[in-house]
Length: 122
Image (cartoon, rainbow, N blue to C red; front, side, top):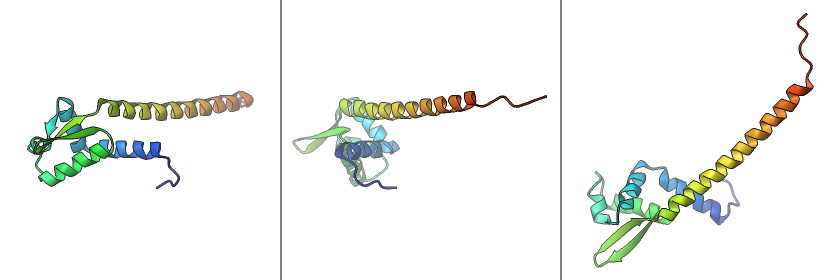
């Protein structure tokens, strides 16, 4: 289901989690987190075409999870640690909202149970 009227912040979170949804991109993120790598060196680690690796890197870059910098003929990729913190904050906000909903439902159920008479067992 697609929701119309999402703000830029919501679209940014969508791009972030879309990028993180793929195991290859998460692995690329981990590798680049250890130190910057050229796209060609990154491509050597995967059984896919160079173009496919470039597409994965582009998804990561659009999500703000990595940055690319051209040095000479190479494009160096580096993980942005602040992006991981943004993902954590988005998940924390979701957790907080759902915990509040569960707490409200628990309260309503407790009120409902407290207002009912005990069943007659005799």
